Figure (cartoon, rainbow, N blue to C red):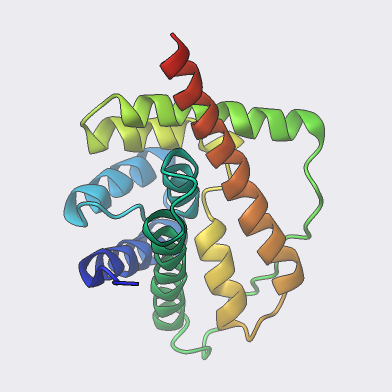
Length: 194
């Protein structure tokens, strides 16, 4: 497997900025959307957020293990590494206590899952039909209440805390991304049928 080092650097850099600026400093939705757009324009080609990577995974060639699944899996890993680096910097390598605790994982109820899939479908339709990082970023933040956008940051926080809460963070990280990705796949298939 050939690894695209530029993509990995872009993912780590983008995830670092998102964890440090947006999640670490607690910016609001409008500021977060602007930051997301700037990150996407600066780190061209980077997905930055796990939900975006899951959308690319599930709308790509599902039979291509090396070109789709492994490449995007490496992007997910790079996002976590970037998040860990940001968290280590913000907490001065653990010297500053943040009081972070993992959110307890519970399988989503039917309507919450349907809402997440629908949000993924709407956002992917906007993202794949515009050439603007601004439109994608504002769409993502507008629909962010129905999607878990802090999955990479949560995973990084858990790993930076020596795996604290990993039993809750890991299934949420996978489930949230997969549901949004299924929505993106549905949007793609519906668009192909119309």
